[in-house]
Image (cartoon, rainbow, N blue to C red):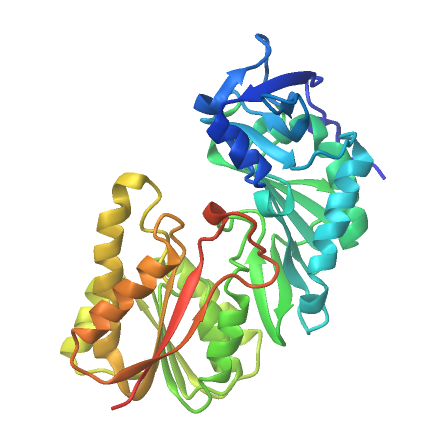
Length: 409
């Protein structure tokens, strides 16, 4: 098996001895994958990005964790092994972690689904690294330079475990601008890619993803189970999919027998993808699209007296920074109020958030407050989080939450 030479890093990592303050040490002992720079009490003077950071306990001098050093991030050490057991960080170490991650996805892969997240960053022991599979195409997205010296054995293991024919590398903006490597965003680093738009199956429904130019790795896999559920609840119904992007909820609804689906998104290109994804499946309903700002277009629909049996509102993250949290909460409350006005009698309103800084309980409380202000009777039917291929091992790793609200009149 051959990989192109440009994945070879220019730096050979060394080992660092690290000691932390009491708070930092407690975090590592409890299994948290982040060590912030202000937690580090003692470390080698010549520490470089990608170095193996061996974290020792302050008193007993026992190894409590192993991480990768990142000089460019306030999260200075990303933990890859939380335990006192001794390990050698080598190809076998990474291969065993990838096999363990794959084992967690087996129930999902027993369904008619060939698209899944094989590695979910920190939650699978690979902080700053995502690996998504779309049929026979594996897309690896890097968010940190820490992985560059270790990339070749990791890619080989990912190829072996997933049985992918093609591997694509995607890079964060910071890595695209970095001068420490020769990788290019969207490069095919193994196999052949005949078309940058890859077709795959998700719970019997066919979709496509642009693995070279699409957002993240080309698609958003985390909402898979919610899309399946909404599809099943949409038979014979009218559906509004707000912030539809490539039509995830819309296409499931059409494929499962919705009478009429309206996809609303600010991006005309995304709506084109939604229409094309719909056509990959057999459906008898009508697929309409609205291009524009979601808030404005929802208000316009309300003014026209439009209502829908099922309304799904799944916006992008509103709080990418701590300073944006309060504004994000106001936007979520506004969307819940608008959604309630667009939901028909006995209809279903589905509200989602992917802002990790707005915690699940806070989001659900916001929804309840907003819906209570509408003077309509409703019941909370369900609250969901990530699909099974997005396991969560620490609080900050949980970002997705989704509430189902049934109106009783």
